[in-house]
Image: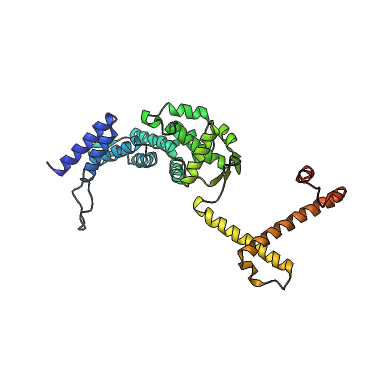
Length: 328
């Protein structure tokens, strides 16, 4: 049996298994077919070229396998590549415009289901800038995703009716693939609106319990798909505009700058006789920071007393934080 015959046989088997929704066996045959595809033979040459029709069927099956395995980001990229194929004859196979638009629509569906984060945003940008997507159903969802707007429930429910069974599968946390994708996207959208938000309020926006909102946010932060931090004492999600990978370096830089400034201010207040090496001592740096905070509090108190001189008699022990908040 020739290489070409074996290649075509494995691809046909993969297509038949996919028709039976058996992605596992389909992938096994695609792996065997991939070893028979044209490639560099290591000596500067190449193996015998496959016919365009076989290559097209292989690429289509590969995208469908990725889709079935819920690797939606990779599947969307493969579907989009297929949608960009030139309309016309590819060997004995005629690629029609309707088939390219169908591949584009599948790419849009997988992009919606892909995990929220920077990689998906790049994919969404490509799809949004493709003029063909404006004529497809549910372009409003693609636009909301790209513009990082909150997705509306009725639009999501209508979109869910067009999905295949495996795209509505229930995940380990009890939500469907679509529900998880929408929840993660809406958390990212909320990060563009809020500086911080309680999980109770976030859960109301997402339409999920507060504990579920916290679980989703913590997973995204851990996977570095969301910049932020969680205050578990106050149950608040604090969004940060700093990229997750740079947050630690930025925090260290801020701490160093604050410490240096406080130490310099302490030295200036102490006079020219202060030891230059004091700033190098961590304990003295800590003391300098505390002194700077105390001077800031004194400045605030002086400003309050200047505006409300009747409170002068309270200074020295009985002016409370409640008094300050009431007057502020």
